[in-house]
Length: 218
Image (cartoon, rainbow, N blue to C red; front, side, top):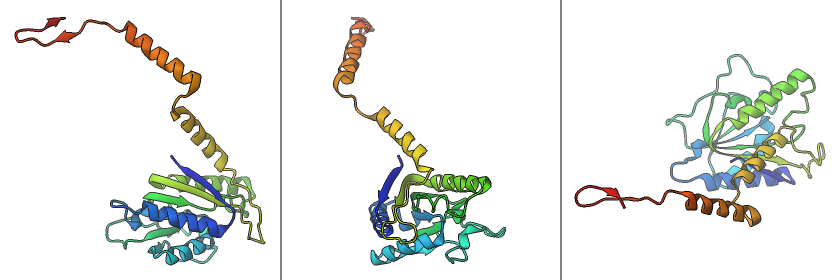
């Protein structure tokens, strides 16, 4: 089940993502099985600082890491796949460069309006591409995914951000699944127990028991 979390500042978002990665680091889940995905390289810089402070190794993915390098994919930009020869480090990657890659645990950060979709996406075609990127981010995780966004309260450029338009459908599906899997309480629980009793009362009472010779109905 995806986890969706919101934070007041970008720093809080980066700190909580770092903590989540630390919890996921267990036997069978090395650092190289994890990734932090963002719309732009600039968003990954803050996370890198918190990972360094926590002594968590990380590796930047892609041949070029300027803040806007991920906004355009060159034809020869080929994503690298995880293999045993890679260093044991958390992958920091833009969503663009994560295409074709899979990780056990993925933190998809920056799911706020202006970030995903990016504020530069104004046409229908550009917004459609942003939606495809959101799908790419969601489909990189094999075991668990953390989706985060920040209100940017301390960002003078874009304060009081709102959640990405792509989050509402995700949260709606999560709520439906949780409701469906929630334990029954109150009248619903009583009705379910009554139905089970009726099924037991209506079940056949003939039981076949094994004997030393042959078996027959008891």
